Amino acid sequence: MRRLLVLTALAGLVVGACSGSTATTAPATAAASAAPASAATSAAPASAATSAAPALSGTVRVLIHQNPPLVDFMTAFNKTFEANHPGVTVDMSVVAANDLQTTMQTRLTANDVDVFVSTLTGLSNPVEPYMKGIDPPGWQSLISAGLLMDLTNEPFVKNYNATAVQQSGTFDGKVYAIDMGRVGYSGLYYNKDLFTKNNVKVPTTWSELVTACQTFKAANIPCMTAGGKDGWPIFVGAYGLVGAAYPDQAALVQGLWTGSIKYTDPNMVALLNKYLIYERDMMEPGASGLAGDAAPGRFASGAVAMEAGGTWYAPAIASANPSFQWGYIPFPGSDNAADNTYLFGKYDMAFSIAANTPNKDAAVAYLSDLSATETYSKFVAAVGLFPTQDGVPFTSPISADLTPMLANFKIGQEQYWTAPKGAGPNANPFEVNMFKPFGTFTDATAAAQAAQSDLDSGLSALK
Image (cartoon, rainbow, N blue to C red; front, side, top):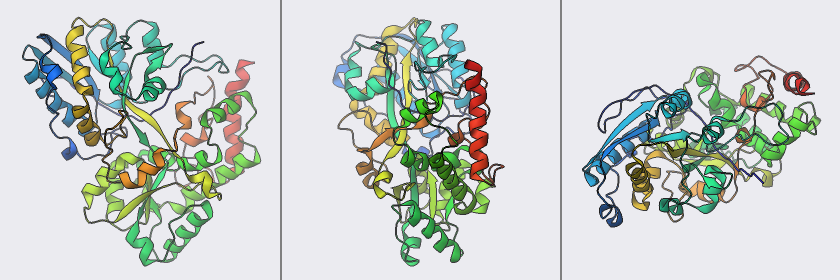
């Protein structure tokens, strides 16, 4: 039986190509990780096995997305690869994340790319049996068209955790992508000094979080910040809310499709009311005008108590203020502390090889060298991902806080969700900022009714 497990997400970019190992970059977007470019050190030297490999020649055409730490690391890695394989030239192009899918499909069809970031979310959002009338995701169409190389028997695949390979890069029993890491996005960064000075307990429940925000606001200290100008950082930062209420995210998606779960259910209305409180009362007023990549600096300034956001912001916070005392906790969305121990996230940054590459040996060597443990260790440190290779250290500034949370890592709902065709914009309210000042709603019941109506408009067309 066809089985696919998935996990990952985020994006934004600009096309740029150049010869040799130089990359033309575009301004960072919402998809770019916030790790500082300085973290991207030179790639590791090739292993003895690599240097003993047969001589290679030709050009390896590489396509990646705009992400400053990634671009810096890959530029350094390309120089190392060319030095270790003197007959090979690397031609790397960098595009905005939002353009990655279209550019990749165009270049694959033209047989104009060899190694590329095939998806920013792993092989996610598969068409499940209960979903009707849904187009397959782009990665599935590429596989069906025979455009992605089967990597199953390539030795470097064994460098990665078998479960991660199965969950994020395997379809119909074959490996088509190698996900380079994972990220989490259901947490809160908190200012240790402000918590101590104001005698505020680090919250482990929703009620404690509400009380903490009320205490800070009474002291004229903004409770939370996030990049509201970009939109997505607000709802991504609050992922612990839906995760605490529905820890089985795949079952939540299935329930909404089949009608066993409705947005108008009392527990769902209560959940949306928490989103209302979060957006209306917890976020500082200026968050609506703050860009996503500016939020880490705002938090690191020490002026705000918390920042809701993903684990990829940690290097930027550390770089912005090295003396700043801060930590990372799960977003407490429930009044039962045990419901708030999960870290929701996704697999991130999958590399694939074109099935029709004219330079297969060099393309395979490229991904093999990148997967060598010494090089890979530096890659995840530079880009800020949780490793998908066993035994590779996790070097984030918040590694001490995150390591215990990784035992409770779960894939986020948006990695399973696909809206029915014809559904309205609020059919997935967990990816929409519905409430003022970021949206238009001021009442959770009205928002729930709108969400269900938008979902029903798609589901009813299937009957």
